Amino acid sequence: MTERDRRKYLRVETGHVISVAPVDRRDRLAVGTDISAGGIRFQVVGCEVDLDDVIRVTFNVEDHTIVAVGRVVWATDVDPITTDVGLEFIEIDPLALRLLEEEPLGAA
Image (cartoon, rainbow, N blue to C red; front, side, top):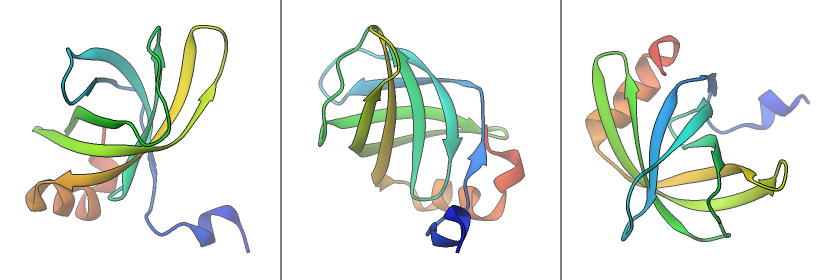
């Protein structure tokens, strides 16, 4: 069984800039790595990220801007200032979720 076979949601690679912020702080820029209906993976520079942090992300799928809230399920230091983060969505608009499920090639 491959890693892809074990995944609950289809992931789509992206390299677009996204906005991330703990729900009570100002936005920071990050680079989205991949996205699915279940969550998003991104890299952020100069920002401490801990397991279970709740973070708001803003990104685009085709012409739609999506704002979602998620919980950090893993965070790995890439280097002294860059962190690779896996975020599981806990709040996302149903229309946005449908867009992620129906238009995976347009995710970015």
